Amino acid sequence: MSTVATTQWQGTPAPEGAQGWTERAAEVAAVLATDAAARDKAGATPHTEIRLLKDSGLVTLLGPVEHGGAGQDWTTAYRVIREISKADGSIGQLLGYHYLWNWAARLVATREQWEFVEAEAARGQWFFGGAVNPRDNDVTVTEDGDDLVFTGAKSFSTGSKVSDVTVLEGVLEGTDKHVFAIVPSDSEGLTFHDDWDNIGQRLTESGGVTLDGVRTPWASAAGYVDKEFQPRVYNTLNVPTIQLVFVSLYLGIAAGALETAATYTRTKARSWLHGGHERAVDEPYVIDIYGDLTAKLWAVEALADAVAREGQALHDDPDAVTEQVRGKFEVRVAAVKARATEVALEVTSRIFEVTGARATTSGEGLDRFWRNVRTHTLHDPVAYKRREVGRHVLTGELPEPTWYS
Image 1 (tube, one colour):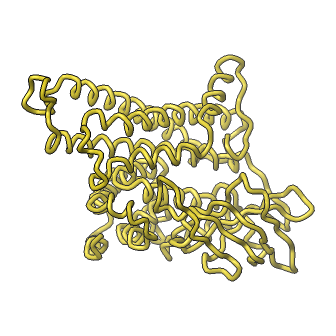
Image 2 (cartoon, helix red, strand yellow; image 1 turned 30 degrees about the horizontal axis):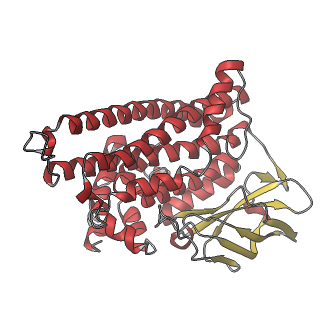
Image 3 (tube, helix red, strand yellow; image 1 turned 120 degrees about the vertical axis):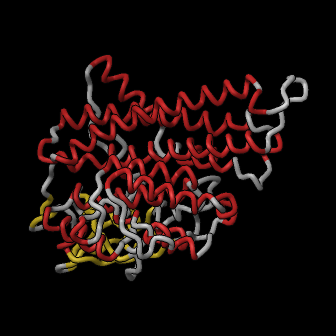
């Protein structure tokens, strides 16, 4: 990736409105797309890519305008994630997780805490990572005077070495109280490991992390007042919010796969020698498959946009989020998560039917789309998302808030 490309927005005015920021994301995606396959193969830490996100202004998309942010909402953020993911699923995931961890302060913390975090993050262009894998229950938080001390490990820490700050999570020793806190990623005792070596999402820096006595003031414990957590139903929107980040990631990767495949079919694919057509684009089965996959993708995109708008209404009025409202929203999120998973897997695998054998060369890199979707869609079993929807339809049951629902 050219260093020049990462500075092309310097001295230019910030975009205006949701459409302007979506167009800016498309410009960033165009830069990422130029060498996406090569960067996926190299698997290097994406420092330049994160610099690109910062220089373009996308990192501070949700930040307050008065502190240098764009002041956009989640409906725009999801569109931006989709645009970036079309070119590079790894960078789309990093950006999406960054948005969630930045917003986590507002979800969990007191107003004084989240206003401080959002202001500082916007001014400093903080890039967020998170060591909050809920399947690991081995981080203990102890008290030491006015400090909290985090000790333990997490299997996954997306963003790790490219992050400025990291969200930590652990259980207060001797209690069942979970504690979230944001610390600098270069904090003493915080060690990121180079052990992320998966078939997809190779640039997400999602390896393990060790916390060896990482200290932070009690005052930074999100949502705690006088060492007691102040719960709100709005706290539980973290899961449906990040699940919509996942949806945006999958739909973006699928759209990128279709666009890349279509370009290949138009410019490189050969028609079948017994098909009676000179060009691949005139093959009836090729036309049919592109029409089928595009229609399926458009349908899920429309559902995703509708559910995103429903979610934004909850973000706009956090105090109005009741358990009933939250539960119904989670059912809607579960539905679109299930469909996005299935359609993205279908699109990214079936593109080879319309590109042909020569498209499987490693230089084309078409396999990265499927590898990325297949890797991330295993985050949590999609069958449980369908179960949430089915139970609600049959019995009216609403999902109980958990780490995954």
